[in-house]
Length: 196
Image: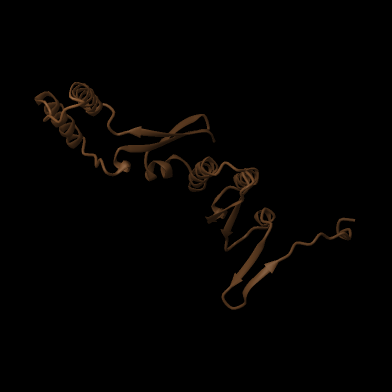
């Protein structure tokens, strides 16, 4: 997997909205310059260009008070020499395995997190559920990425494998009957008699 890209696309492209808004802006600027010192009613030309802009916006079915209706997010990535485009949740799920789809979201989230908080010395904690769905190789790569970004994963995993367990610095076992038990790793300095 590689070459992950995020694009914000305007839903107004190709709908003749920009042309109408541009025309209204030019007419408004023209009229403002001509009548800058006087309080006069708008000209018929300005009223017509305003009406055209409003009609174009209405026809586009966007809510101008909600930016989410004005743009759409498109993610693309390459997997096994295949370009995958993601426009919605179902595209993401059908584009790759569940683990890989979630990994893509985490990578994007990590990039956006560091874009918003570029100070690498700021430690960030991110909750991540069901890390066991990832391939073990991808899990190790995820931990390497997070370590480089100074982001700590907080995960709950009911069946923690020994391989995955090694990736966590702090491990706790939460049991309804026993409460919380902390695991402490110890280095054994004595040689293993079974390997001797």
